[in-house]
Image (cartoon, rainbow, N blue to C red; front, side):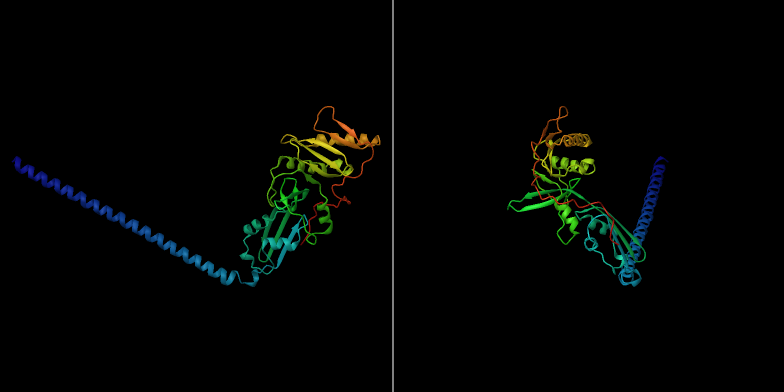
Length: 320
């Protein structure tokens, strides 16, 4: 009896094991089928997406990019500076008659921002056939001259942030603009490379540009005409006026400006004028007992550059 029971038990165990194996195989089969259906769905979706994209490309090339209703008819350009409409459109690589749908606005904006004289750019598209471009230009506050290795003299312009630009050539801007830029204060003693479209990091140059920017907005701009700023000495800059006065300024700490020094310069200037004297040298880098020396006699105007009457450089929006 025991022997028979053992054989029956083993047969039952084999049947259970066989049943488990069959069920496992059946589960794997169902899983494989689901995976196959998922892959097939992805392939079908990809084919549909590809067909849609191909249809869009064909419609764009054969209809959207060729339809006359989307041809650019109104192209408005405004600027607060002196760049011509032709120069701006050439930089933007856009012209009237182009298909409005084919113009990529972000790419156009990036292309315009590569111009060294542009500070900001806005482009707007108005369907179906209008494009508006508005730019703000950089305004130089100083000039700098640099000799290259071959001894060639290069002139650059700098705005108040130290951004480097080239001067306008005659015929590419109004005569008064070219004349105004040619008589901007000259930075003396500036060392290092100046690259068009980039910003200089020279601490003396940056301090001089800050001084000139604040000077142009102060009352001293109506009392004394700065023709040059020497940046060769560490920790200070020296401004020279048209009448030959030399005024030394200490470079302020970051976040501070030259307003106090400019007010003190004004007070000394008015006091000297009231005495019938001209400032020879004035050292405003010294906080107490400011050193002052008057000219012994009226000096000849500084011979850094000829000094004609200043031309106005106030921003005026123009073009259309």
